[in-house]
Structures are given as C-alpha cells and as structure tokens.
Length: 167
Image (tube, rainbow, N blue to C red; front, side, top):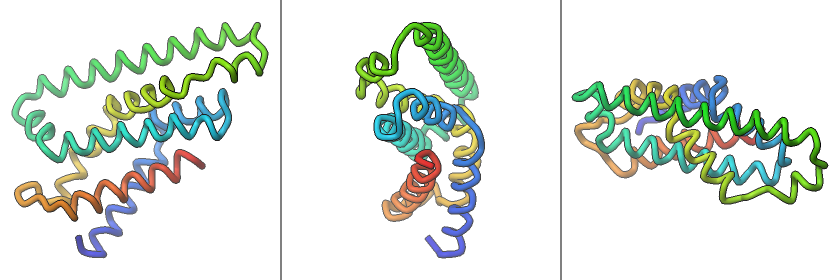
C-alpha cells in the first residue's frame, strides 16, 4: 500500500472511529459502569468484532451482499435486534442499580460476557458494514488480494479504533 493511500485510510479510519455509533456508546457505557480497566475487556471484544466484520467483508460477504441484497437486510435486522436487546438490558440494569451498591456492581462484572457483548456490538454494527462496503474497494484491490495489504488495512483500522475507544 502506498503511503498516500495509507494516509487516506488513516483519515477514513479516524472519521469512522470518532463518529458516534453503537461501539462508542457501548465502550462509554462499560467505562462508566465498570471502570477503565474492566472496560478494556469490552473494547477488546469490540476490536475482535471489527476484525471479524472486516475479514468477512474482505473475503466474500461484500460480494454476497452485492449479489443478494436480502442478505444485507437480514444482517441489518439482526444487528438492530441485538442492539435493542443490549439497550433493554442496560435499561433494566439501571433500574436494578438504584438499589445496588457500587461494590456489589463491581463484583457482578463478567469479563467473558463483556468481551462477547463487545464482539457482537461491532460484528452486527450496520454503520460499520455500510462504511466498510464503501471503504474497502477504495483501499484494497479485491481482484488481487495481498496478505500484506489486508494486514495494513485491518491493523490501521484497529489501532485507530482502539485509540479512540480507550480515550
């Protein structure tokens, strides 16, 4: 990947990471409820979901969505349903927290649950899917995929998103 192309990718990665979305809301929510160190587990989950989403799009899901638009509709519905469920869980947790002390909240933290929630938030993030469907062809030649190009592309997006999500 040429340096000028990489700078364009860097700017695009920064734009998508700082724009409000489910991942940002989730990481802020985890940070305020569980503290910075515990929220890092959720942020790692977000990054694993982001990597999975990009890899799926790089290696075929983008083509599948292009050929069968109904697949994209199913992905949107699943993503929306998951975010609604997460929102309801957060809302119910807020009601529960009124009568719960801070120490009780900290003792109920489940790292594996936070990791998986973060993973599925980004995996089903429709804003990210649409963005990456438009972005990938600008920076990656899908007809001649190179491992090095894919690695640079994914690493750049992950490092920028990780920096933004951790503040």
